[in-house]
Length: 136
Image (cartoon, rainbow, N blue to C red; front, side, top):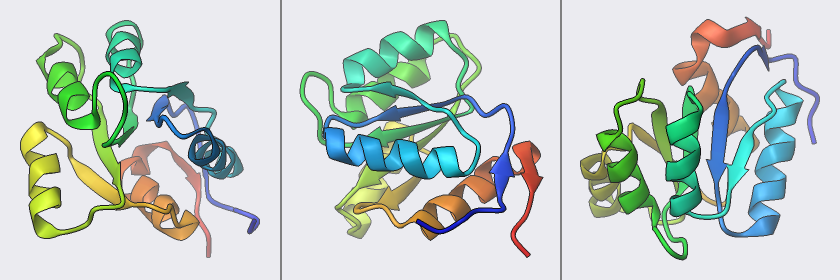
């Protein structure tokens, strides 16, 4: 993996992903940027974690067991909490899929499989106030 000069500080992030290998890859990419994320295996766990901890950003898989990403997002949006940015993680990047994500209350989406440069740019855009330094 590439060496990152881009680092973030004090980012509270939750990754919601049911596939272990994808979760491990995401965690490693985020660690390279100075982020130690919390993890959840499904939407049900994500909702419970969002109730007890303030997250800046949630990376939400769409297709998961128990509670999918759409339902989890709608439930989180109904909570009386400071609302996080919620980004869909999806292999479906058709316009109708993007619309469904936005209609569920998600702020943005990233295509799977994850590209580390796309993730870095996404985080720079949404978490610029937590950026320590920048790639030059």
